[in-house]
Image (cartoon, rainbow, N blue to C red):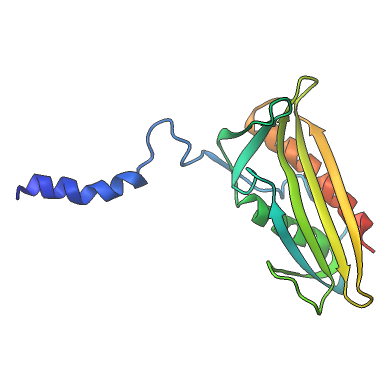
Length: 193
């Protein structure tokens, strides 16, 4: 067999690893939630144990791509060249854990329920940009259940916030989602017993 043909055949599996010009496989920018989410309030110290579980993420949102939903059609698309640093579920779980620890909780993150600790089980229903006729926005909707093990009580916590999107540039788009997250997270934290 010809050596050139062998070389071509051996390199074919590697072709899938190459980014083509114009592809979105290797984004120029990766974002976290940390910038803009910290407040000037000092963190509390404490030892209230809590297991945090981000149980589910809405359809089309469980990715590291920054999602946009058209309010009229419901179509979900993704911003080019921009990604979150982690998938939405992991990104939110890490930031919520940090925010809870700042409120005096000792947080364990898990994908499994624990019967021995109080738990905060969260569902991410929105974590995206919204295109609407009256103005675009960043939207975050968290639906959580707080399970208190001592007396077997459940408390439903919901937070649905949006923040005006001033422009579709990367920094403005991420800032709108960060602001909506900050409002939603603060609301959830204030609802905890």
